[in-house]
Figure 1 (cartoon, rainbow, N blue to C red):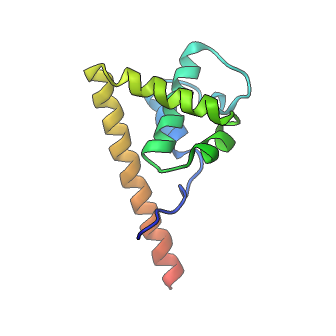
Figure 2 (spheres, rainbow, N blue to C red):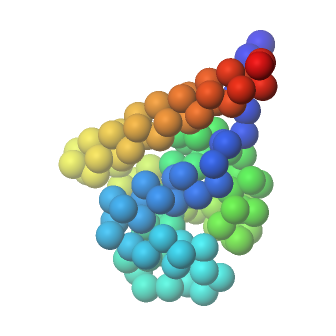
Length: 115
């Protein structure tokens, strides 16, 4: 059985979500609720961290300074938004790009540790 390593770059999903939603990167990690647009970008970042990068709900909670129930709510919210075909297509592109980056980074790290 192959276990995927933890996401090697904390904030990779946040950077993608911030860019896609035109939100300030640093605000995604704010302990305050923030503006609705920032909260939505944070929800997307959490979702991508969990789904595309394979981070556990607990790891997402630590990364984004939220409790696990909030993380589950964020993922459910994004899943509901994926009923919209245009949002779904954008989310799928982000997932694919992040998964490719994750795989490339993991390969580079494995290559470096083998030397």
